[in-house]
Image (cartoon, rainbow, N blue to C red; front, side, top):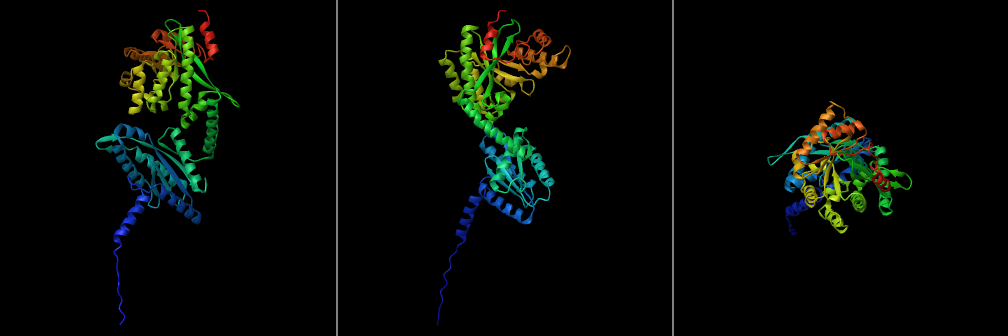
Length: 452
């Protein structure tokens, strides 16, 4: 009689292990959303389905605005709690057929399948902005954040996954540059702008290497005495094909590519070289101010320390070069920015607040960082008239600054009447086309050498 022996093996544990490995490989460990690897797989499937059924699909890339500041101020644990809550809200804004993925850090992506029209995409995009704009309560702390969204369509914009991702990325950065907390569709115009910026960035690298940059200097006059012993350094670029370019033509590209750091070093050293000459030949108090990019204040301390060491080697005191910053830098709560500002304060390098009056800067910030100068924005100075609102605003700003032992510089002075009113109000300095446009170093020296 034939006998059979059955041997059974319990494979449950192995299946569980394999399933756990698959989940680790395909899902984000923090949020539980599909990760970058599974997202790519889902996009490929969505493209095939859209091609087969003749229905378009959309791809969204989302980047949280200023998420780093939350990590810096509240800690990474709170940042993780915020990301979890954001993932939950995003998932509630889309349909069951759609995919929400976390690509890493504070970057998310959404695949919108089987679209009937663009209206549904816009509705979802607006819902994302609205949902994320609502405050987050994290361990008793109220936190606010926003998101920038880039949107591209298959097959209208591109048919390959890499091209779609590139398009969505370009549109997302367009949303950020337009002011954040908004969505932007990919367009050929964006593509052309990105291509032009890439060419300009390459040219800018050559400009730094080939000495195509030059500083011009706009005089700042002391109103009480009429003496010029201050100037603002303004960078110009003599492009080989396009001729002279103003900062508005290339600073944004320098910021985006990180070239602004190298450029700022060049500006600082060139200004230091110039101020040493003008202190020797014209006025020992001479001071040149340079514009400080927000990116510089997010660098570690080694950067500004190299500036301080450069001044020491040149035999210059710290007050020979001033740094002008926007109100946004002063309001940045991160430790890195604060430490950088404190290092300038401690060494005695003057700090000016540029375009003052256009933001929401608090008085405590001015006191905390020992600000030396406020520069009243030209939008106030340009409308100065007797009994005008701008006159009252300027009087209030000057009085407040003086109470805090801060000197005041009025920007954009173009008429004698404006200059007279500012002097009458007790404004300390004036800068503008009434006095002089920005000049080359040679022309500036000729101005200083003129007899009174």
